[in-house]
Length: 440
Ligand code: PFF
Image 1 (cartoon, rainbow, N blue to C red):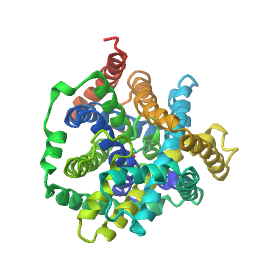
Image 2: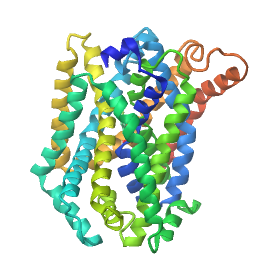
Image 3: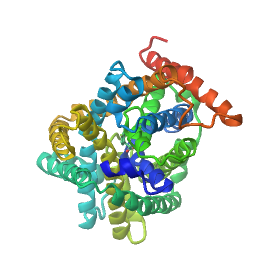
Image 4: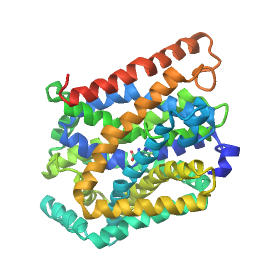
């Protein structure tokens, strides 16, 4: 990406697709359905959408703004903008969050690669719900195989960053992301024709406010941060490469809409299928891996559909791991004053990530802790820090880059934005924390 720093992205749409490609990933297709399934379906969806509306726009804008104004990634950005070291901890937090997420994210990416190979070999034929669940358990309990399948995406991601081929990825995203969306629309259409699918639609879409608990609110906030990649500096990097005349508000809205659309589609595929085939919606992290193969069995061209879908899922995962690993790689380069160049940084980060992956594969409890802690604690704290940093500490935050020139409607919007950062976002995050700790 070093080259792009000088030239920016090739086009505005290129940056939107790359940022959306980074945001859309396993969080939308794997994590969203399983967390929603564990937290009451529609109750979770309502709170999730409120969180997206409340946090999404101000925080996406904030990360783009930090990157655009500093021209740096998370480590250098806070120092450059504040002129001192007091906010350096935020850069460290971003890097640590990226490492923790990578620890489990690569493992799930490994599951996707493993399922792609299985789809090619057509092994799911004739499995019922119980057999599908047993099959998943068999796959993940084969630790050497899982380790191997998790190392593969690390190598791929490392290679993309090593050879600086992000432009290629940008082009790839422009073609493959719409294809993934189209594929998901077709799957949703097929699933809706299944007997019993209406129960799943009710579970996911029929609002039931009684099921909203402090735990559901906390999980929904975490999922919102995770899915939109906010609170850990990934979007700061895109801000740094953003063409000067790109509109930050419009770009943020487009990324949010695309990301939310994919999550909603994933829910609209999984839940009707869950009820039609007799799975349990609270199955846990294996949910999509046991349900989706059953969906493909019902589709025409089932072999082709499942191979294409798992291939697209692997690519969606890799575009996300690229933006994740970039946070840590840029950190190592910037923190070492470029004494460690990009290649060395890629090697160091990959080595650390491999250790974390090994721990997650060998100790499943660590996988769960990483999954939970990164989204529900680390990312909200990072977002809180960034909101306070820009809202209270950045001189004239709206002056350059976000809603400038600050005249007319833009002036009013600018005021709303700054006040959201100063009061609304910090207050909401703190209240949700206190609420889930039972203090409120
Ligand atoms: N937003 C990604 C997803 O939904 O799969 C996960 C992610 C990618 C989080 C990159 C953070 C990040 F920096």
